[in-house]
Length: 298
Length: 226
Ligand SMILES: Nc1ncnc2c1ncn2[C@@H]1O[C@H](COP(=O)(O)OP(=O)(O)OP(=O)(O)O)[C@@H](O)[C@H]1O
Ligand SMILES: [Mg+2]
Image 1 (cartoon, rainbow over the protein chains, first blue to last red):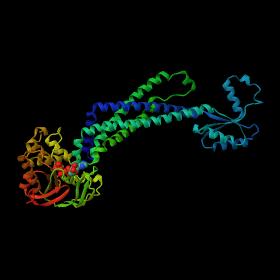
Image 2: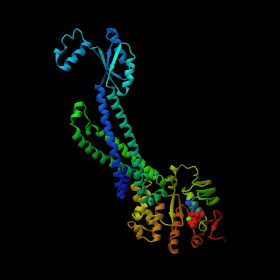
Image 3: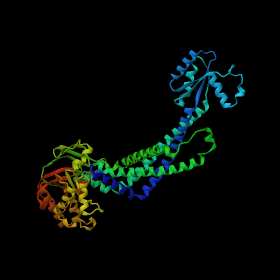
């Protein structure tokens, strides 16, 4: 494309965007509102996923080994566990390690006097997972192995978090679909008004042989302008709202005690920006394509 | 140049606007389409422009059958035709110069070409001194001249006019018709649909007469049969 065509498209696009000020304003407001709601669920989902990842790296399964297993059998068990899909690491914890860690946890060695000879703690493997959703499957596979005495894990916490994450993901997807439908409708309606206002020009363009792409260009630009403006406004509002919320709950005792950090908005900035821009541009293009269908038929 | 082979057109409403029409207009010819209101003149013009599709038959333009022309090629077909309507169809917020330049702009002519071509066609239609004026400051005849300038500015091989003098008084109408004749003399094929008996008689060109969708006469001469 020659430069004068690009500048023509952009100039005409801006001109028609601001000709229908009221309708353009209304569609930007509606798009911002729906994008904001979507953005809320999106950042909440991002945080839950980040918490889950943090748990995944800490939370493990403790596999207690039969007392009478030989060193070779313990070795084999370790290799079998590592071969299970979804297992990240399997660390051997000997009877002595278990006792020592209990001593450090309680901080009072005198309590354990004489235990070294008659150590009641069983040896175990501490297993971490690559993906928490594989928790139950991995556990049942481990239980089927020889020399496994018992498994200990925080099943309920893991399952609850996982279903929360799933719920948020489904909600986000539903909101995303609604956002796309509402926004395409409102943008195409807005552009239809400008198309209608310029129908005379369009019909002349067609009679003198302008291609559909050339005629459609400024209206696509119009849709993209509305989409991008909405995306940027929503990003700013979401950032402000998010930081305000983080300031009030960020240093809450509960979160600190749990040891999980929430994401800061700057960590998500480029992701949210990218998602918003893709949505804004995509919705703009689709909306304008729909609004032009009727007028390009002849 | 323009050939209709057994062309019929039935609108969705059920109206059969033209029945099994055959004619051929050669390169450089000047032809009138005449007939009473509702006889099918505008339908023929819309078919030439491929604004409407024939129900059956073939339409050949510049040696190419347009029946199966892809929609994306239609703009390029139209670039070979200049089009003029009864109601001028100028853009009110653009000057005379801009209205003409617009037709070049949208087919992506270079700015240099536009600057050279527009003043030339404006002087050809006798409006060199009205370039900066807006359409509502012009008489009907002058507006139709602007439309004519716009129609020929891209050097089309044919000029199609649907009642170009319908809104003009007889003297102005005659001026426009002389202009169409000048354009024809420069080698452009010209097709004019019209009711204007006096003009058709005076011009003494080929007359294709349509009646209720049929060609009832096709010969050189006046509006009515001799
Ligand atoms: N878009 C359309 N849909 C349905 N019927 C149509 C359409 N356009 C024209 N017709 C019908 O087709 C017939 C021919 O119309 P057309 O416009 O070709 O006549 P015409 O010769 O140009 O008349 P006029 O001299 O009044 O302009 C008429 O009966 C008209 O009602
Ligand atoms: Mg007509």
